[in-house]
Length: 455
Image 1 (tube, rainbow, N blue to C red):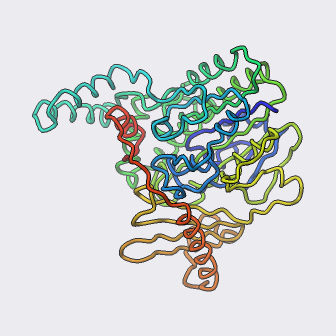
Image 2 (cartoon, rainbow, N blue to C red):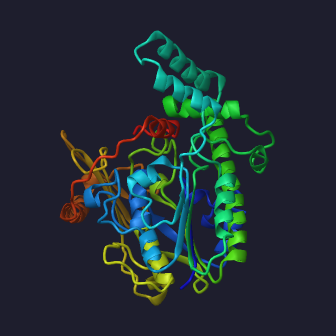
Image 3 (cartoon, rainbow, N blue to C red):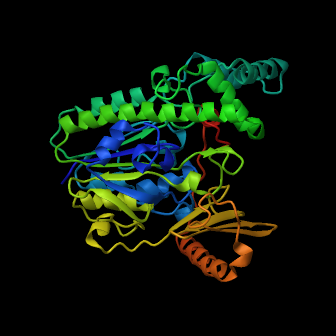
């Protein structure tokens, strides 16, 4: 049985990674490892944000299956459970509150470091205000307004939205170095590429002469969240510089982690990917919203198994991560994994021709739903609302930026893809179940708000 290391990076779009053709040196360590790995150039997420995307990575099932992605049903099989049952020691390190054990992500892990860490002085003060003052009172309203104003105008970073990559790496390496006779499964998730973008100055200097101050970075973040249409070209350039510097910082920590794994693990399998990309106003907004355009869906996917190298251009999905790692460890792939083992690429039997996606605002598939279908030539997006259905069709071979909706001129294609979406919705219905709602305490809610989530 091989040791397995899975690294995921939040909000990392494929076209900002060096081995995917980016002209900036954002990922030197990852690019070096990619030279001896299989790089899947057409890998796509099945959803548009962290909550719906991670069930696809860790359970190889679609977001809206098994009652949805508000929490993980026990009917889903986590990759950590597969390795734990096979006698592996297992650990996960992350700081995204939506991936905490209360949402079901702790199953199968011997050790989890999650986001419930010391939030910092300002965050504790803000939390004390929320917990101890009447939210209808004048004192509460005044202090809450002061916190918000401080971030918006003064650029004061009130609270830490996530644990920085260097601390996550330190903790993961410490765990790796523990003596054991068991094989290892380790999952590490880095949040730094998710806004707020506050990269160390040394990594900004790779892309600009003068680093952007933390104060200005926070002001830029407030502007692109609240008034994206007012962001100037110069400000957009600064925002991308910050984003790229966060990628380079994260890459340096992935390098540290891999160096430790090279020393501590024998003949290990390494996979690297992202849960989704990031928008830079390609379709009018920043961050990552409930859209299915490629700036949000196209993600890096790199697999180092010691055998296969080179670039592979067939369609791949995040559903394929878990079965590929289980297969590479010579373990039996669970029946409830809906993805495929990427080894089939190399055997010439790869079955995937498209990537389907789904999402709903309540996380359970009730009410409005959105779906997508993507292959090499077409992207089809369907939004089902109480006021009717809205459909978009893009011919990617002629319109890779997804600007011109050609649904009206290609009704036969629309009908074909609509039927595929309807069949997918039927598959979701077949797994439907009622899940108990997760009650989040205010500390978790605030951390999510700091990350820009609206719970």
